[in-house]
Image (cartoon, helix red, strand yellow):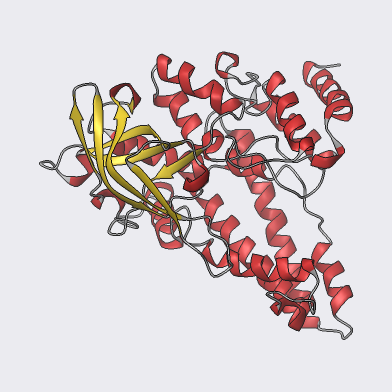
Length: 387
């Protein structure tokens, strides 16, 4: 028996004994911090996986991970999928700033921040976009002035996902106004619980308020929480976005395998006629979704151990976003009038949730970089087309 086979058997046995029933199948995933309560089973699952380093399995053990090779990591994901176990931890800490700190952070920064991310103690948010700097992010105007051993930050960010629940933010700021815009940007880490930070949630068409405006009025970031070199944050910020869009983070979020017949079952439940066009649309969608997941898995398997894939990973985010939008649209088309419920006794809770999910997915091809930005990245960095 090979070492990988032994690892699979040991993993399967441990999961069988330690994965609570309440975290098997669809449901919430812990995002870190203490501001968003989680149920008892999710808390237990987080605790048990933290002890094994399985919240961030490929991170080094010194920083709270398990130090797994890519082969073992994929086996772990496969075994979790087999029992429909949800990830023990998700969020921008494990998917974005954590991998970026591993690559660019000092040893002191890694030891101070990464274990708290790995054990779910801290929740993070991203301070990138501004009202006048979205697609053209390098035009950002939020200023940070270095005064002694701290930066004093003034300005505004927008679309800061989950900022109202976050403990810390990784924030792009302008630290030099006399150089070309890409050259005067730095990446800072700052605590959200301080007098100079104000967060205002933005209510969406779905009724959710996940996005926020964030205002800085002489907020403070410590000098030791500058990531990389002063005025050299643009390169790091682009790499962070690769981690966000990478197959590793997306694959980890999808440990629970979807029911491949879910849409067909929904069709049978709500459709009494034979709508061949809709059935054809469902079949084609399921084939594209399956092909996408296979492409993901292959790209991850071909990457170096623990490393985020290169620019080719940019295809994952637009593909995932458009698949999510199409799936929600197919569900809405399938259930017809039942999919228009907002509230009231005339609709089941599942139907109301489906309506709001359909509305919520409208943002997906804007979040994490618009479709246009993603396609430009693919054209320039993957296909080598002229800018």
